[in-house]
Structure formats: structure tokens, C-alpha cells
Image (cartoon, rainbow over all chains, first blue to last red; front, side, top):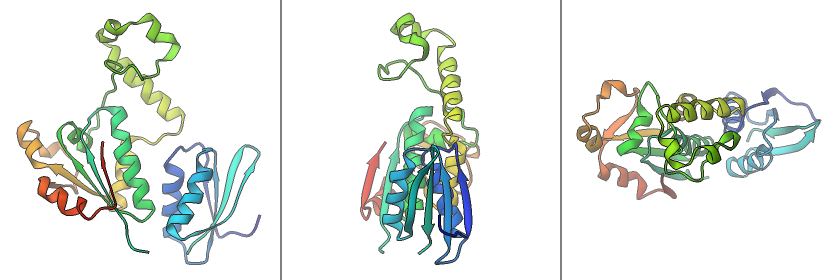
Length: 76
Length: 159
């Protein structure tokens, strides 16, 4: 997995909390910085795709590792 | 990107029905929507500082009941005293164990994200509600105020 600037562990949280926490964390980051998110909500896979499409932040990577979902999002 | 707008009317005051307006509004705000919720009739319960909302299986055949309770307690059994309190407490436990946000937390997230919360003044007068029991940062207005925003909205939901 590529380098990242900040990490957010949203394990155990259900919709829409992973998205809301991610948005909040991104608010405090600089453009071009990368956020690494870990989630356990299976719905978060489609949700982070949709979040990236609608906000312009780039979803660089989305994968499942040992039953957890990991995402890399680059702030627009 | 032009800012999209979401307008919601929240009319219900039970624990289960309190979720959709706050989930959709907070998510929309995170996606960059300008969002307003107009609370009317029983929906005004969602603006109380002390959120003591209940859920009832009565008149709701779609509600999943734990441990086959729907077989043991036919419709009239659901009207027994204490049944509503029990179902409410079970629902809250279930939500907490599944990592579903608490209502107060979701409402706070909405306010942080500048979702506008508008209380229907007519309902406040009708039910003689005490506005001191409501959270701060809400607006009191009528139907015309709702249409001012809803008329420009991209999505408008009645919940």
C-alpha cells in the first residue's frame, strides 16, 4: 500500500459514520495529502466509491485485507 | 462543482423513524450538499435536548422480532404494558452492538456540518411545546420558509 499522511480507523462503525469521520478528517488535511481508512462495514466499499465520485477526492485504492476494508483517498 | 441542495420534511417522532432524516442529512452534508430539515408535527420530538424516543411493534407487521416473539405475542400481546419499553431497549442495544450511531451524535454531526434545522412554529403552538426543551441553533418558521429552500432543491424528501 502506498504512503499516506493520516490514518482513520473506522472499524466497528456502521453507515454513515465511516463517511462522516472520513470527511471530517479530510477537512483538516491539505490538498494532495492522502488519507488511509480502515473499515469493517461492507457497505463502505460502494460508499467510498460514491463519496469520491461526488466530492472530487480521488479514491486511489480500495481493497479487502483479512475481513477489513482499506481505502486510500487523496484530498482534492 | 455547483452546490446541490437537499430538503427534508421530518414528520415522525419514533426511535426508528428518527434515523432516516439525520442519516441522510449528515451524509448529504459530507458530500457537499446544502441541507435543510423542516421538523413538523411528531418530528419535533427529534429536536428535544433529551431524546427519549420509543419504538413500537404495534401496527408494524414488518418489524423483525427477536426470539420468535411474534409467534408468542400476537397483536394484542404487543399492547401489553411494558412491551414498548422492552422493544425500545432491545432496539437500542442492537443498534449499539452493530456500531450504528446514536441519534444525539448524528444530530450533532448534522449541526457541525451546518445542516439547517427548522422547527414548525405552528406545531409548537398547536401542541403547546416548551421551546426551552429544544436544542440551540434551530430556526422557528412556517411552510413558506420551507418552500423558499425546497423550491430550489435538487432532492426533496418527506419522511
